Image (spheres, rainbow, N blue to C red):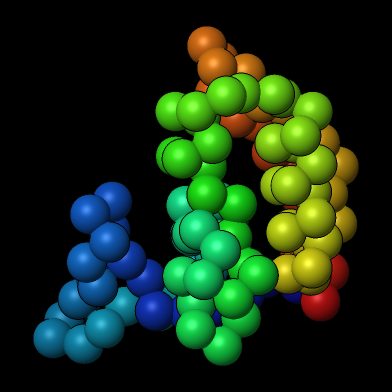
Length: 99
């Protein structure tokens, strides 16, 4: 089950095609937004977000960060197969939306 939404570019600006907002598969951007958001970022869902940028710039524990990513993806309707986090290699996520 794929999610469709308004698309944004790498700078988080809305994508416009033929004079209208572009709509398309949006799971990748949903996951990106979930990872980048800090607690309190979304007013009506204050516990949503991993705060990846803040976590990677502070004290770093891969198991704790991996658990936080799994929790957030699971709560957002993803079946999480794999989450690997490394300060040098980055983050590797294999998840599929199930609801």
